[in-house]
Length: 272
Image 1 (cartoon, helix red, strand yellow):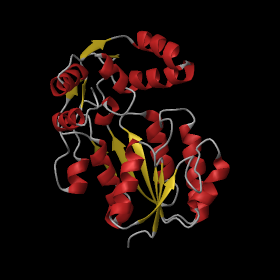
Image 2 (cartoon, rainbow, N blue to C red):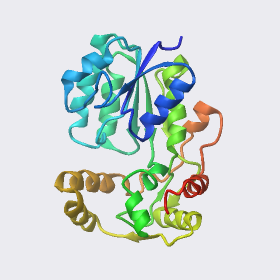
Image 3 (cartoon, rainbow, N blue to C red):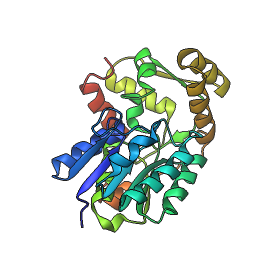
Image 4 (tube, helix red, strand yellow):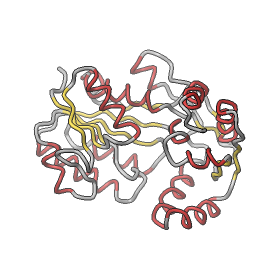
């Protein structure tokens, strides 16, 4: 049975807005979950959660700022309790590969007593076109403490399709899917692919975590610098240098390749 109403938490984010669009296009009743929606959903205002969850059968959960944040496990625990109280039947949680806090959040959802699907994703292709790596790409220099570590970048459109399947098909209940792209690329190779597609110089510089932290502190403040630097230290050590097959398991096709993403983003003028 398909859920009659699906709440998309983070409906203005990279994954959430795509999931909301796919649900609406396929005729599913969808409720947006953001600070601007009606009713609103605000991670920093738990008093908004009950109303947003009322009458909902399934919910997609994307935590802001990131499940790597220390605030994530208590927030996810409180949300799952609120969802159970509201009668929500099924949860779909977006998590990150190789992140200790993300795994804690997975365990909270798994132990909630609710039907659930866990989607564990690698770094997004769209980080280079919509996220924190867009400005560096536009500047021509992507600097990260990643060395020559390979990352199987995954496309957000693939994540959205998997999430919609998990929200609307009970066969995915109780499953954990690891989503990656079809191959490993170093950040230097990713920068080179962006440069070719955009027809402009884009390079990669391997820096230390300390250098990254100093730059981010100056540009975005200590809280963001601490969160992102700690995340890089955690996951850019080679632990995620493998390809998983969750996209194929759910969608019956291979995941979108980074080259195709670059060509489409360049054609849309993202890196002009």
